[in-house]
Amino acid sequence: MPATAIYASRILTPLDEITDGVILVEDAHIAAIGHRDEVRVPPGATDYSAAGMTVVPGFVDVHIHGAGGHDVMEGNARALDRITSTVARHGTTSFVATTVTAPIDETCRSLEGIARYIRSRQRPQENLQLAAEILGMHLEGPFISKAQRGVHPPSAIEKPSTEVLGKFLKASGGLVKIVTLAPELPGAIPLVEFAVAAGVVVGIGHTDADYEQARAAIQAGARHAVHMFNAMRPFSHRDPGVIGAILTDPEVTAEIIADGVHVAEPAIQVLLGAKGFDTVLLISDGIAATGMPDGNYRLGNFEVPVKEGVARNAEGKLAGSTLTLDRALRTMVALGVPLAEAVRMATVQPARRLGLAGKKGILAVGADADLVALTPDLRVTGVMTRGAGLV
Image (cartoon, rainbow, N blue to C red):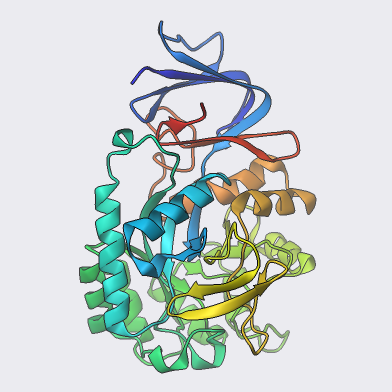
């Protein structure tokens, strides 16, 4: 394929800002980046003008269940193609396919299907359609608290088990990236140690843990918090609980659903004030209803109704979201977060959490050519995924 030269009024790498810059893309990777006077563009390159625009890395979502009318647990190419194309239009160029609590055999079948799909899509240049890349799987369940299960089916919740996690790792072909865990459950600490040894990020979530139980998991290697504030033991000044443990540990990254529904704006500000910008990750927690009209949609192996863009079960419990990361970015900026910091929360910081620093979530030589062009009001106007798109 010929090289592509993207000319932008502003580039946020997002570690640095480049004005009047150019990004040269060759063979699905960034070959050069800098001020337009510093980058040599080869003859025959395709030019793309992002005049008046800001170009940022493609968004990386570590927690998403579905989009475009489909759920990742369907595990087939038709469903996953629809999900990857839907979120790409909103700037998400890579994500971790997130399962919900389900019977073990059913979860294994889903993981096997997702793994087959990932292997089949490893050569992006063979298919120039705009589609996000699935980086692996996030197991949101079954090792969660029944007291903080949210909408997860209680009959499929399991005690932490290294044997069961081992089955999941085998079914996924080693592609499980994150496992959600309630650290107060019996067997939780051995599971943390087993997961970390296997290279899996342990996320504290759907938990009724007190402060000491959460600290024990963190000390054992848990370094991530799943949809902060939601499905967690409430914070109190005499019982800080799991939220207090997360807020006061600089090594723990925290997901946040910035959709104006899951977390009140003052709570987001508390999170940012306690942890700073560098350990907060924007996630969508999107379900099949993302990018779709109101109606009934699948989440795992059950259905949830969506009304006015909000998913709640019959008991009124939130059941994921219809958020996209471009909207989450706008929410954070409206809260007063500097644009560069908000972009980091959706790009380089989740990439680092996944061990993909230098490859994803950054505009740098050698990185995958995943990028988004934003209008001055932060609307997506162009997307490139591994060198495809932005035409």
